[in-house]
View 1 (cartoon, one colour):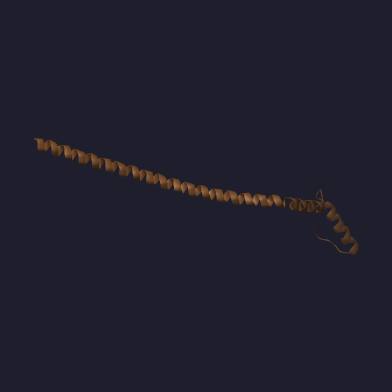
View 2: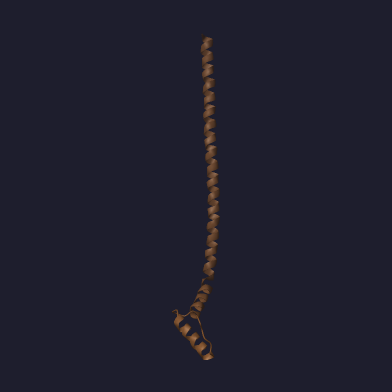
Length: 107
């Protein structure tokens, strides 16, 4: 009987040890998965930071070019009429055609 108690006690110890090892292996596996997920998230954040830095550089460059672009815009505004004057253009074309003896069929 003492042998059976010792055997069952040893068996219980081995079973508890195996169960503890299985629990530790499961916990390590889940932590490893969480570590990989965190690494992937960190890599994604690094990509986002790189994109944000590139966008910031573009915006800084646009800011530096703003004065030149405003000058070009002002020049274009001076070149274009304030209001569309197609009727004046058509009248001028017709008058020039009449003076030169040309007959305009369609404008």
